[in-house]
Length: 145
Image 1 (spheres, helix red, strand yellow):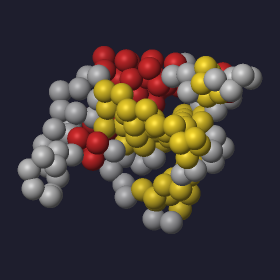
Image 2 (tube, helix red, strand yellow):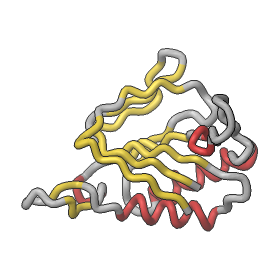
Image 3 (cartoon, helix red, strand yellow):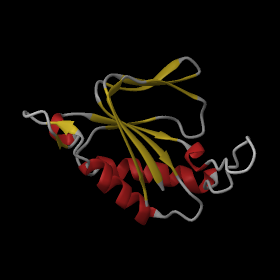
Image 4 (cartoon, helix red, strand yellow):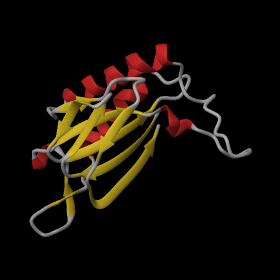
């Protein structure tokens, strides 16, 4: 599994022109699921994302996690994180998990994040999502297990 975590201000996700999810501030988390991934990887991803200290404390140091600042998470499925473009110009997505495997792991990851007491909103797995994102910093972390 791989995540791209971005610290954000107000961020929203729409499908077919309809608002699906919105957070006032916190983390936009793009989740890629690789063939062979299991709930064990989702547990590690959730623990890492919940604990990332990328929000500023009273001294201006990145020392606080999303829960400590009252933020929320917008979890977005993104199989393209496993796009391989080493050969040619058209990415290959053969490393990405099949939807019937990835969708339950995506939902499981959302539940694991909620277990840390963080409000988590989601997109619609497999949908053509439009994301209006306000990057804060910008702060972007890539993590893979």
